[in-house]
Image (cartoon, rainbow, N blue to C red; front, side):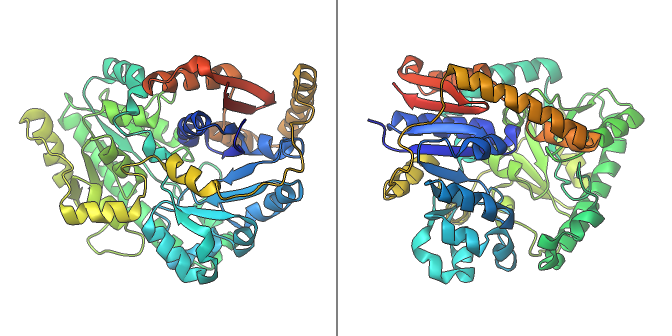
Length: 455
C-alpha cells in the first residue's frame, strides 16, 4: 500500500527537474507515490488528483489563491522558498513568505538553521510549522549522485577542452522579461527597495568588471578557454552580441543543451559573484572564485558564499593572475574549509551529510490526510488523449494572446517535458543509485503530470 501521494511543483525546468527527479525516486523507494509536473499542469488537474500533499517551491503572495483552491479540493500543503539560501534577510522575509500562505501550509521548510531562525524572527507564532530540511538541488552534487552527469561531462571536455566556467547572475540588470526600472516598481519590491537597490548596484559593478575582463583576457591568453553560462532568466542575445563583438575563439557561450552542474563538474574551476554556483562547486569538490562587487560587506553579500569560495577577488588583475597561474604555472587551489567555516556551512544548509528527502519524509509522516478523492479521477488512456487535445487548443489560444517576448520567456523557463524524457532521467538516476529501475512505475496520468511509484 502506498504511503502518501506527493505533488512536486516545477517552475524552471533546468534548475529544478533533476533535483525533483532524484527526490521523487527516494520518496518512491520509501513507498510514496510522487507526481511531478509544471506548475500550471498540476494546478489545472489538481481537482481530479487523489488527495495528497502539494510541495510548493515558493511562499509569496501570488501563491495564496492557488493554495486556497488546492486546500478546498482536499489536499494538504507544504512549502519552501527556492531562493531562501541567499535571499534570506529578515527585512524581506514577510514578502517572500506570506503570512496567509503560512496559515495554509502544514509545514514550511527552510534550507538550514539560519533561514529557520530568521523566519522565526518574523513569524514566532509559527514555530511548530517551520523546519529545516535543506534543498534537493544540493543532493545532486554529492559524489554518490553526480555520476549521473558523466556522459555530459565527457562531451563538454571534448567540446571545450580545459576551461574556466563563468556562471553569470544578472537577474535584475539583464532580465529577460523586465527592465531593472520595472522590477523596482513592482509592489513586492516596495517594502525592501533598499535591498534591491543595493543588489542592482552590485550587479552593475560586477558587470563592469566582467566586461573589462572579457575584453582583454581572452586576447592575452588565447590558450585558456572561457565558457559563459547566463542565469536562466537572463537575455541570451545580450551575450551573443557581446561575444561576436569581442571575436575571440576561446571566449564561448555555453551550449544550453548541457546542464549547469555538468559544466561545473567538467570545468577546471568556477568563477561567480555571490551566486549559488559557488556552493554547488564546493559540494562537487570543484574550486570556485568569488568576485566581490566592492570591499565593503553589506546585507546583499552572502557569508556562506564567501565561506565556501576557495578564492575571493576584488580586482580583475587578481583574477587574471589566479587563472594564469593555474594554467601556465600549475599553481592550483582548493576550497578547503576550516572547522569554523564548516560550522557556517552546516548552519546554512541542512542536507550536507543526509539527503533532503530523508528530513522531508520524516516531517510529512506526521500529516494526516482525510482523502476527499481516494483515486485519481478521469485518469486513463482515453481521458489523457482528450485532455491533451484540450491543452493544445488552450496553448494555441494563449500563444495568440501573448507577445513574442512573453512566449520566448516562458519557453526558456520551461521548454516542455515528455514522458520519455522523464523516464530516461529516472532510469539514469536509478543506475547511479544501484536501484532496479524495473521496480518503478513511471507514467503520465494527466498531460504534463508524471507519476513515479514503486510497483
